[in-house]
Image 1 (cartoon, rainbow over the protein chains, first blue to last red):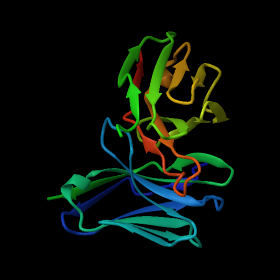
Image 2 (image 1 turned 180 degrees about the horizontal axis):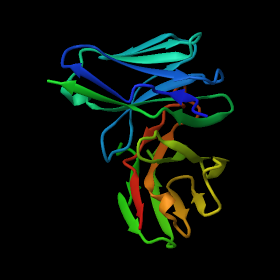
Image 3 (image 1 turned 90 degrees about the horizontal axis):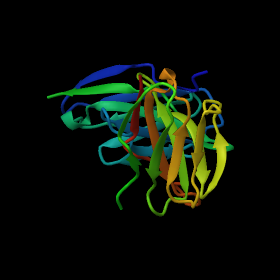
Image 4 (image 1 turned 45 degrees about the vertical axis):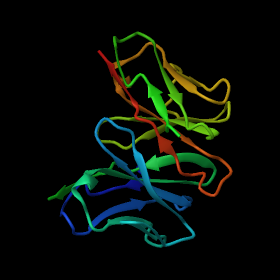
Length: 112
Length: 116
């Protein structure tokens, strides 16, 4: 049972444009959500998070939006830069557990 | 702050051998997590510690796997009688329990295990 889903395995965007990465979840008990960026042969790097009491959180070029009724979150990167090219994972947690449940990732390629 | 470190970065072993990995969390972090990642998948939770207490274990953690955090600082993950299916990236993460952002976990570089 995949509780966190990233349905787009890859995304290609031109430098300077907006990148939008999407994530859906099924467990209504999740109360916080995170985005991680991962380069090959490295561990995931924390980017940005949002708790379920908010619907938006911004940090520089990165903004995460949460739509609880749709059980959907998205990560916006603007403007996109070639260095943003990596695999992006969304993760969710909450309730009685402290573990994170990860999606399968979206490979972002930012073309110069 | 040097971040989470893991040792070794790569391990190649023969089926049936035992292996042990080490994780050093960020120094002030009291929670430590182990995850496993295989190709094309996101990290999957294995277990976590708060200080030296192991508070949760996944069903993925078979009897051949054991984890310890004896003094509430570094942790070890041991796999006994390795199988080819154990080949994966083993990731360690840490966090601070008791602050507003205690759910933010910070990952190490991982240990890549290959079982031949």
